[in-house]
Image: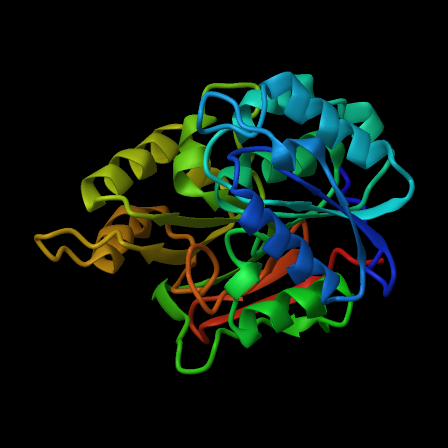
Length: 308
């Protein structure tokens, strides 16, 4: 499916804030609203932001899906921010209006559990998504680099070219080679959970990005093996490995070695330690952009962006 471009965020635009996954306290919600208003935008707060269901969801699945549909159909809303991740995004996938969403492309920002929605938008609606920090879980106390990097991307100020890690953080090629393709991916646990469903990730001809948090190496091995058996690595052009916060086991198994052993047989370039995911500072990545990775020169380059 052809990937559409979306309009950049402008001063005084109205942005939607909704909770497709987990709930937050009202104190955190207010701080999240303030964090967005600092950018000079108006914030339309969805009802899901003030809901709680089962103790770990921001409302019943149909209610969360209805709100997301409404925010895409609302012509006054220029971008949609996911309040936080947690758990619950895959529950709303069957209730999303893909044709309506496809006809109303706009910026969409989130990561972690929001991976399910990012993949849905890219594959079923041809709309890019920003794998970037979320207001309640990140922006309320984000470091300057994280805020600046997301802001530049949303405003359309990010030039085509090399993506830079925060200072003193090196991208590392662990399997040599160079490849080009559309950037897709997200949280490994979510991608694994969608396997075998109508919403599983398509990696054919794409650059696959993966990251996760607080997973033991044997669990990473299990999920990576699932993707391997599903043909996701053999079909991809190349692989980017983001951050793996809290994934080092008590046995001190080097997860870089684990990934290299598992991915080297495919002969696809692999770039390790791209600082995007559950980390701070955090790089925002434009899923749906056409990119090039070079594991020999250890570079990630955006060749065609997502902003029109």
